[in-house]
Image 1: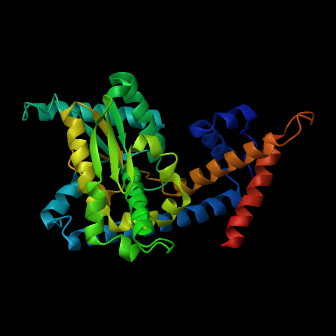
Image 2 (image 1 turned 90 degrees about the vertical axis):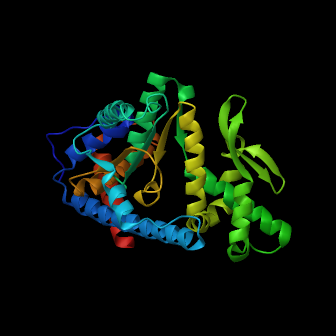
Image 3 (image 1 turned 90 degrees about the horizontal axis):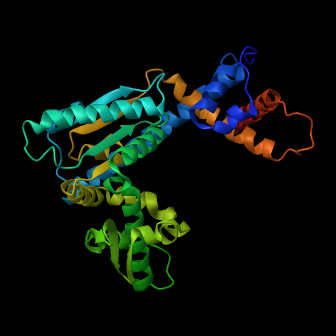
Length: 347
């Protein structure tokens, strides 16, 4: 049952983010249906994380076998494991977490400057990882906004490996169309070691009109990512092959990212990189943070609350304005029963 002592207004739900999910969690903290559904979602999220981790591990193994990446020694793996600072986000807002991370970066940078004369002048790479449900995306966005306000938008870069994978996918599609017109895409032919090397040669990271861009030049293309990231790179044929491309090209993209980030740092830029530990282990920076949630059950609860807020707001939008005052509580409970049963019965 819901907690009658906690009330939720429509204005609270419209705030979205932490405010709305926290209100829903308080309202439904004693609901058996909510607790069962959130437990179901926690398990599903954990399974997806495990599957993603396995795919990344396999992709790294492919890169090592191909000779793109060197396998880390036991000592290097141990150093990589302890290079992350774990930040428990339980009970903290994204603003509090991002403030803490930035303070730690400044303290470490000051300490490193005593040993490296150029460290204080170079930019920083802040790497952030964490399992689903720890608020990594929100914290990443909050930290980026904080740094842009403090350092200026021209000095802060959000690095995305995702767009590099999409460029490779697009190039591999174009290669297939040129070599085998009319045939279906064949990843075995398109993603050979030689072809992947050629795709990477088509990508360069350079300054264009005063700002850094990834240029894609080859197979009929001569443009920069910012001009095609919402068009060509979002095509359904690119999305369809993206998991395969990402698995096969982990090593090449890690090397490309390292080279690009080095350029940015030397130019005094602050770079934010979000990813998984399997890939961040190969990224060199003293500023690595791992978000954790000491109450693992809260992962599913947060996800359930986010889904409910979105569904309730969508339903309320469809209610006639002339209707009597909206009972947010009743709608929330109805949506809970519907969504929980749909999820748990269908699976």
